Image 1 (cartoon, rainbow, N blue to C red):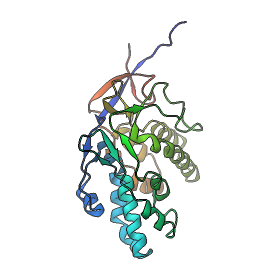
Image 2 (image 1 turned 120 degrees about the vertical axis):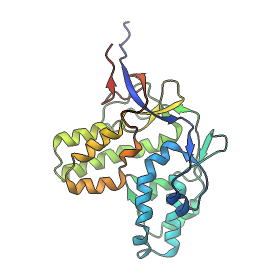
Image 3 (image 1 turned 180 degrees about the vertical axis):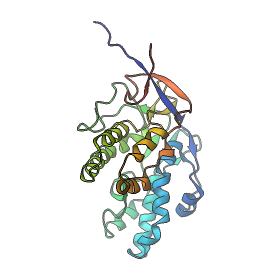
Image 4 (image 1 turned 135 degrees about the vertical axis):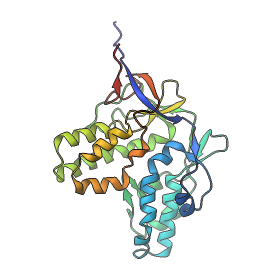
Length: 266
C-alpha cells in the first residue's frame, strides 16, 4: 500500500504545555485568589471574565447576596483551575455547594461565549495533568459545519471538556449569523476560524500551538455587521491568539488543523 502523503503545515507556538501564570490583578482581586493558572486558559478567559466582573454590579441589583456569592465562586473556581507547585497537574477547586445553592437562583445566570454556570458546575473538583496530550473522542468539533479532526491531533488534557462545549458554540454562532443576515463570505471566515481555534499539542507534545492568529481573528471580527460585532467583541478576545509574526513550528497535517495554516511548499 502506498502511504498517503502528509503535507507539512505551519502553526504558531502559544507556549509550553505546562506553562502557568497568575491572572490579571482585576481577576485576583475579584476572585480573592493568589495562585497560578495554565497560561492558555488565562489568555482565553481574561476578556470574558473582565466583562463579567466589570458588569457584576448590574446583577447585584437583581439577585440576592447569597446568589451573588455563589455565582462569584463558580465563575472564579470554574474558570481558573489551580496549577500545582511542580506544574504537573491543575485542579478546579471544589465549589459544589455554590452550585447547589445557585440552583435556586436561576440555572443560567451567566452565559458568555459558551461560558455558563451549568457547564462550569460539571468541572468542580476535577484534576487534570499538565504534562500529557490526549486524543479527543470526537471525530469533528461540529459534524455539521466543520471537517473531520486531523487523524493524529492531540490536545492538552484540560481542553477535553471544553471541546464538547465548543460543538454547541459553533452551532449557536452559525444560527446567530443566519438570523442577523451576515454575509456568506464572513460566515465562512468565522466557520473556518471556530472549527480550528482550539489550541492543540505540538508533534513532540511539549508545546501548545494554534492554527489561528490574532490577525485572522481581527479579520473575522471586522467583517461582521456592527450589531453582531459589538456583542462578540465583549467576549471574543483576538489578543488571546498568537501574532502571525510570532514563533512558528512545522507540523505534519495529520497532527494539525490544515485550514488557514500556512501550507509549506515542498
